[in-house]
Image (tube, rainbow, N blue to C red; front, side, top):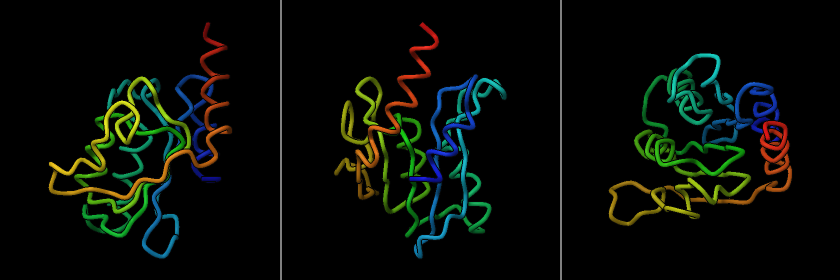
Length: 142
């Protein structure tokens, strides 16, 4: 989570401070990213999607079974779908997203038994730190 939190800070001051890291089965970080929608003008440039793309490139395959996605904010539906499509085995996140979360708060796509693939979910890891980054960002915008 240290790496993901550091990545989140890199999104500032222009983008929502969300950071992500992907680790391989041994726990080695193989990809990192942060939100980059504002700079790129790409609505899909969420930290998770960028990190998954980089992890697939580093891994040499799209199938990231055995890997863990660590992210500072509970993934939205798009990012939850992307991690399932990549066959990520485990999701670890910091802050819960009570407005758009898709890993247990609003939706639970990541563990939906109707889908052919699911991932283990560990939420609330260093939640206070991740939430503070987000709260400070949005407070400055108000």
